[in-house]
Length: 234
Image 1 (cartoon, rainbow, N blue to C red):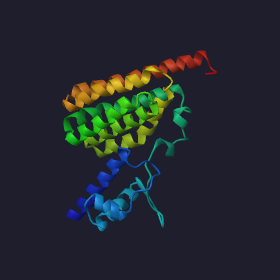
Image 2 (cartoon, rainbow, N blue to C red):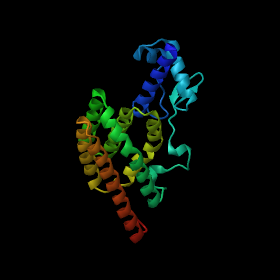
Image 3 (tube, one colour):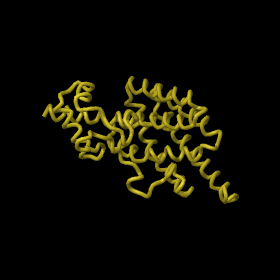
Image 4 (cartoon, rainbow, N blue to C red):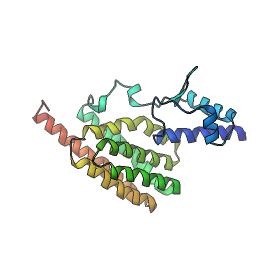
């Protein structure tokens, strides 16, 4: 029983590391021995943890080559979307709305359950957002990392998995809005306040910031849709 609990715990740690962006989709993981050393478990326990993640579709075992991240994204359940450009603006608006519905509950719980490690990791992500403000791709990557930590802090494995599915496309929504010069500043400003809310365990303020953030992005999608309607060649 203890052994089963241990490999489940290790599997969750690996899954959380993937969610934080430590290993990207398609990336090869270290060897079983290296992973076992890192997580302070035996190779047998690590093999069971990896087998569990292969069974749930998080990892892919390539015989003779190694173990790779196989994170489920919306690209696997709908036609590919290159930076969400193939989504109509109405669909993009709805995508952000779904993100709001899910994260509104996640951040409220995360603010109450977070620990000091989560706060450190949120601070690191916020720092990357602030220092990368002139390079929006860096802001998007840091924003995704920030929200991955929020999901982990909630302690809800279903929410973590749902966000893993949804977040690549939510990040792509930011790419679509990249030409709006005010968006990077918006992303950084909202996440500063969101970080403060998490640090203070202020569940209401955390929820309020997610609502402000997602709705502000929805407003910009509507503006872009109107602009496209007026200038179809854009």
